[in-house]
Image (cartoon, rainbow, N blue to C red; front, side):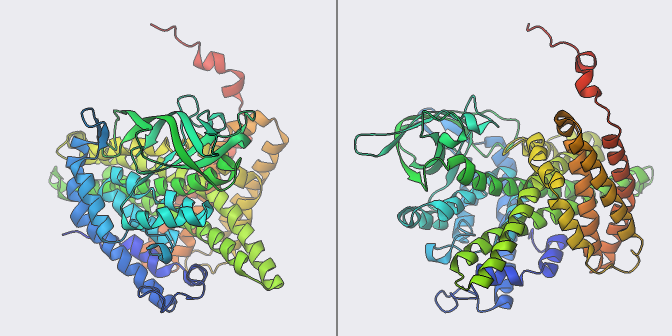
Length: 579
């Protein structure tokens, strides 16, 4: 019997030490629903108790009910049934979704008035990690609760009432229908047409591709409602239900996450409803939707990495070579230590990003309710600060954790050697599942493009200054000076790059983000070191290794090496003629 919450000391560490009371008060509107709903908390302690119970339940379901199904899900996959004309989930996916629905976890973040649990994103993210550790492909359905969240944020009251209770009950699943054959990362180029018939009703026509869970019952579709406007301002967001006017033309045959169907869809004059206002589909609504999805993929990455590390750790502790277990060989021991450090670093980054987004949206709602001008102004100022921070940390989390996930699964196979390459162990599946995380919902390259703005605009430096003010744990007296020195050097690098040519900023965006994230993590590890000897030991190792790494990264940036740009044709050579 496994419980993926109680067996994970690091998740429980964060639950115990995150200062969630201010968020709880915002989320619960100072506990206005206590007494109105049997499960609404009466105070912050009551809310934390509820969160722990939810996490314990999610961990039990993930460990006991879902994880044993994962090998069968991977083998069977979800596929298009030619005779029935619909997508059929793997049997294990259907069982897992039933278990999650029966536990009322399919509407985790929705308001109670729609049957949801009103959980903050930080708790949902923890649950998503545990589900992903059990089966990464299931997360692509469980983790699409952001579709319901988007409806809750932007749709009309009639639309909310019609759809959100169905999501909360687990009666429907959803899909974010964005990508097209000629509009992958470039969503401004979406061409699927939205037009109004003689009655004013909207109709959708065109093709979408690479749609995760495109067979879902409720679809949020990005479409061009203004044919004369070729930019993103011509796009609106629509809500469509699965019907015979929407055909699944094929499901992709993929390297991994086999239980999650990836669909190509044909819209044939399909009826739809406008969500919110015209022209705001991409700029406002889809950006919010994708930010939530990116946090979800970061959590998925963390779950995969956690699963892979545990396989490697247990194998190394049991495998005897040359008279001792291989975890006592320095090379293997170092791999295992670095893998765990990377996972716990990723978890700290993910929770920072999730909390920033939680406060951003909770404060936005609080501002709308506040009637006293002075309080409203102060809250509005704090909301904007959180929005800037979330705008920086969301792509950072997606980038950092997806890259970490791929690295950890790779190293885990190295620990097992030939056995890791075989289907006798789950690592080959985890390795295949991991690869997509740095691709979908925006590649790592695109996340860097988004994240570097937070470095060059000063958002990162302002957060560093806030973190610097925290008490220094015993034994780390020298660390703040080292980190401050690196911040000064990062600032000099940013200034130098901004004064140069624009293409050089593009070239060094990744090392700029890498240096900023390492500095951020030094501060986060200092914060964690205050609470336990184990965290202090990990923090010492991380900072000791990060300082020279950051120095080297900044040196590369300041070198001014433009060879990638100036000598590309020599370094890369011509493209090969097609066979």
